[in-house]
Image 1 (cartoon, rainbow, N blue to C red):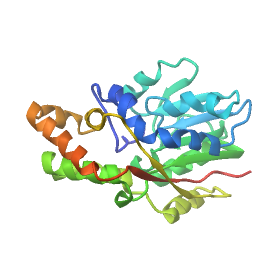
Image 2: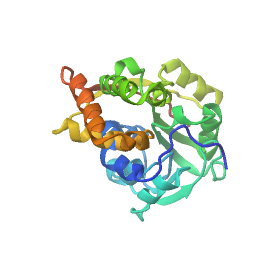
Image 3: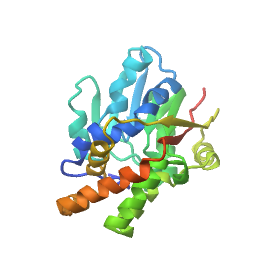
Length: 260
């Protein structure tokens, strides 16, 4: 099996991820699927599927009947995903996908590529398993400075949990330029490459509840939970205060697809 991804969750974090962290990526999930232009009968692979949010929405969003497979290296995430028996769930590394060449018509990857230990290898693997004429649709976060929520959260986390905890978020925003994405796609032999930047607004009726749940869904969850109740509440309040003056606009570049 390949190397571990840079984003690993344990304990109850995968459950919290499905309830809270997914709220941040939800605005792009349907766009990712629609960009792949799925057709009836397509074999669709969701790489780094996590708890299965993207894979589980493929048929309903595309309004097509596809055979969907999700693959993830994190067993905890797959345990959360297996609640949907309509999708085939497999454990495996994105840098060594456990599938034959040309096995899929569509490959999807939401917020995964930047975390893979070898991005070039992961892109080559996605290109290898997609059939001629197939499509690859992926997205990653834009630069950190374009993300008001994450700027506020990372600053507060750094103050409360230290520089290492703050630095644990660096990978999420480390693949944020169109040229980097195009180069990875070209080097993997992909054609008809399109990259665009989108912004979305994230809203939640009770920000403190959302922030608390989001932190519990992150790799720093254990550090957060080890704090006293007063310090946990202070961290949550600090993030909420930093967010009070801004509307949460989050930018996300949507990456390459493969033409016929």
